[in-house]
Length: 194
Length: 194
DNA sequence: CAACTGACCGAATTTGAATTTTGGTCATTA
DNA sequence: TAATGACCAAAATTCAAATTCGGTCAGTTG
Image 1 (cartoon, chains in turn brown, cyan, red, green):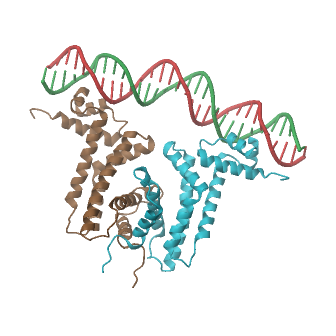
Image 2 (image 1 turned 90 degrees about the vertical axis):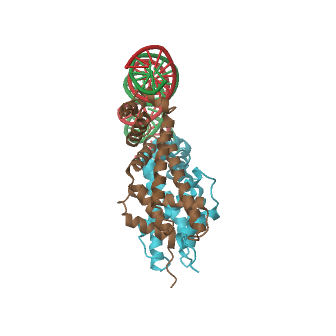
Image 3 (image 1 turned 180 degrees about the horizontal axis):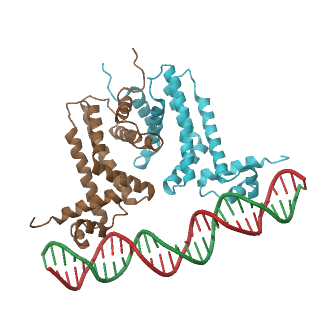
């Protein structure tokens, strides 16, 4: 190791710190210390704390996209892919922790930057889901519909079942979540006419 | 008007004030002034501020139940009733304003009592929807399913469309909301097999 | 004398000035 | 010349004084 990639060191330290402490409680001094780097060095790569945070978010979003693209099999049914991707993303520890920590920070302190960060993540997810829905419509796998509204409802429903539900009840198992997402999205509540 | 019903005066003043200012920003002095009553008088009817608030919530919940029962026609399809009731409730100004104000207070100040109040309202709504779902299942109008989970998803979906959506987009029209609720709940996204 | 009142009390919240922390800079260093 | 950390202004945090507010009760009124 003749020369150390300081930019990478900073990014890794920042990712760790944001996921562990959230936006507000992460100080630049701390990031510098974790990265084993002088504070000034951070500012040779990133103009300020917000940009550094943005970069971490951007990385996390790219990573999520990568996972999604890895899992999607366009020869498989849309709903199989949908569930597989959401599943993998929830398993993916690092991004998940950042996401959870930011949610908590928004609830408890209401940091604007954490709020904005979550919005960006949500937007990225929605954009991705939207494209997949568009594709599914073109393949005549699902009915024509407003992709913006439907992707929004899908995400909200998923969050309702995986997160909101747990505030008052025992968490649902993966199988139950799968069952109810598919029930509502695919067949609806109407009984078979037969 | 030989004798004024002071209890009623207090209740009306409190309802107005809680809906207008939320829990925290409503002071007992203010309620007394609006009610044209000495502050002490309030305490002859209600042991403290929280109990007064509870009473208002209780009234609001009863009023909602009344509206729902008025609208429900059990000879009509379940989904027609569902939509009709949600629709009427949203029209009903007074309860709606209290609900919106409390939501805002929870978001912006995080008042515990406002939080609890919303929970109680949500519980009441969920209980009601649950019973209707149970009834619909027994009538074989919809598939057998976990009534707790399904009522929860219904409410969350409705809130997503009528409230969450508006944070980032133009509000959806009543017709659109109806369309998408019915789309997901009844027929699902799958195209007709024909 | 019974219902009602509002001045009063202590607890809780708010305010604001002093103090500390933190994001960001830049002269110095290796 | 890339890297550093002492340094600075601005933002955040303390903390005590001042204010507000829920709740009481002696006194008033009808």
